[in-house]
Amino acid sequence: MKKKSWQRALLAVASLGLVLGLAACGSQSKDSGSTESSTKSKTPVKITFWHGMNGPYQKALNEIISDFNKSQSDYKVVGTSQGGYTQLQQKIMASAKSNTLPVISQTTYTTVPDYTENGLIEPLDNYMLKGDNKLSDSDLKDIYSSFLSSSKYDGKYYSIPFSKSVRVLYYNQDILDKYNIAKPKTWDDIAKAGETLKGDKIYGMGFDKSWDMEFEGLARQAGNPLVAKGPKANLNTTDTLKAANFIMDMVKAGTAKTAGEDMYWTQAFTQGKSAFYAGSSAGVTQMVAQAPKTLNWGTMPLPEYNGKKATEIAGNDIVMFKSASADQKKGAWAFMKFLMSTEETAKWARSTGYVPLRESATKDADFKKYLEEKPYNKAAVESLPDGFQSTAFKGFSEYRTKLLEAVDAMLTKNEDVKKALDNLQDQTETIIKDNK
Image 1 (tube, rainbow, N blue to C red):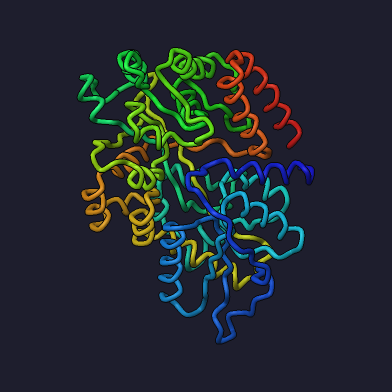
Image 2: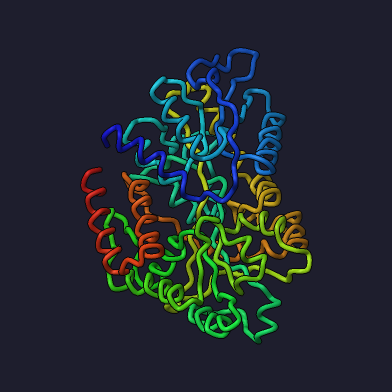
């Protein structure tokens, strides 16, 4: 990939999985991943870790880092927030040029193809599948397969899953009770509810600014992913057009609404402007903070479409950079494995609202108690067996930018669905061709 294309790709990736409002933080320039001492020294090997977490999420991450550092004396992980995902990607780009990359970093799994193309990240197979500290067969079976499959690219593991969320359906029970509407089993039920409610200026469904994630979920349920492995674009097939038209028909009929410049429908939902809202499970934290105490709301898995269930998994992985020393890589893997342990992933989920990475974590006594106390987090866990992640490929972030532009053209410029997706198909085929 050409350098400018790579830079555009890394900048664009910040739009994927952005659930948190993250404020800028100071930079870090001395913690290079290539200047540490070996484990023969009495001083623990420093493992620099860049991330985009802030507020309560950063606090929860710092507690896990502290847990790891206290659990052994060979390594010391030093986590630094780069302010947000956009700033994090910009910092990685700059550090790649100046050879001052950290040892590990949070990033979306869709950056992996571009990172590997530029020789930045270390394959993890020799750590995950070999050696004394490898993942056991039971570990590999315990981690949700959708997470592991997206960590693999071109036949190798290049990342580990970390902060993961799913799309869930928020519902306003007060509206459902008032209008005698049952919880939806299908997307058609949502459309019908919207027709019942629109006379009173209440929407059946609320979406975030873009409905691309729900669109991809419907497309998969209808017959194919937007981009299949290969990669192969399916953006203007009959099934894809059917899925896009289903959403746009609701919007045009006034039974569904997007958040527009508000970005997320959370506030509108808490104000009673819709019966349902398709949003991120990680947004539960904001929902709890914003919803009036009198609002009777809950969550459930997204309903069926075409007789099937599917929900897109968003969020971030962690990658290891090649520029780190052998000792740093060894310590980095120890920390990465620690993050995926049953105890720590359950703790992370309880503290943040992200989903646990392992099935065993959902059976953890403390996690079960947590779900009993906060039942609105159950839908995310229940959705995991039906979770999927978009196909990663070189140029994915450029493609995603074009996808968001296509959705926006349909919403704000009244562009015909077929015209918008025909154009997106051509653009995506060009991106795939240019990145071979």
